[in-house]
Image 1: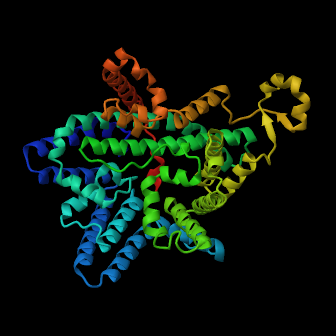
Image 2: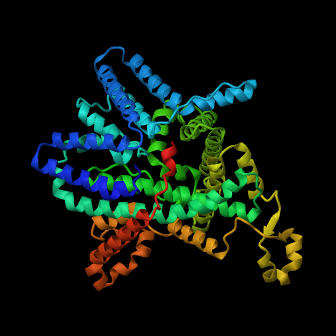
Length: 526
């Protein structure tokens, strides 16, 4: 069941929300939690009911193992066993066919692929439970209530594509649900706003960019060769598609959590505003970055094992992060690419500190130059992430870096008549370009840049609402957008205006969804 589907928005969510609050108000918290667990399991099993038993078996196994780790003297052995079995389950479902295909290509054999359907969300609930086992072993977290643990893993807003919730972030909230009734209208209103923003990003922005990016990559996959212009248009469209797609899911998950009085961790915070790859990974998929740092990078020694070992650790962690995203060499190379970029970034920072050059690089011009540079490197990396195989990626890169020539649409030739000498000097030719949407497409891309670089993110907007506008002066770019708030009459009616705007937008989005605009989220694949 998709968050942007008719059955979810108009049937599942209203029914679950109404009955949850009836049970919470009229009965004990226990009844409301049981209902929420059963609703989450129904949500998970809506498309593939057979996977519910796998999820429940995983939950029961990890809960019992955690209880044994708490009480048993063989704690380390049990922890290693738990991590091994969790990863084995993940590897079987997600990587078996990748290993078979890789083995076949090396030995020139033809072992048959397995007929396996990847359980949706397995990467997320596996990592979440591994983190819980490690925290339990280190006496940082403990859960004695199996119902609370089941809800911690299966809570439907975060079950499919994150965020990867730390147990300590949520356990006390389950016990405090009754008290959250005091803030129910505030949570419902802010949650609805965030969900509406998320749906807008998915239904309007991500889906629009997806049409154009799919067109470019499908063309290459079918054996076509893109021009320089087509390749850059295609990768920019995917760069914005995945941004708004994952941002949308993260927003909707946070909003849904608030509807039920639960605050999930922020997982996405304007990563394209980052001025370095280090900062990018602090803002993109925040809870995955946290998991990789706390449960992989630090145990490997982090930055305390010497400069060169630190860089090796970064590359290794990002390699595994790439593999986590997908079973393919393109994902592994994407992880390697980011691992190398992170190592270079850390080396550059060390160089700046060593020679006391920090003030030289912290001016407005340098920061914006590094923001653009970071964006370009991230976009170049997305080619590997999006490509079906290495051949598609290589062909795309060939066009992206101009190895297939520079072409402009035929109708542009008349615009450059006075610059014919420069055009010939740069070896630019004019020809029909199949995968270029003209000025309309360029306008959309410019609008996307405004959204990711200028406009406030959903977290900033939610802070603005929750603090009745008091926080806008601390919100930098948001201050620019909400500068009209200083006008007395606007300040008086801002919440009415905002409520009307959200209502109209939500109605418009629901109409679009009913008409069939409900594509799957990209991170559902992982």
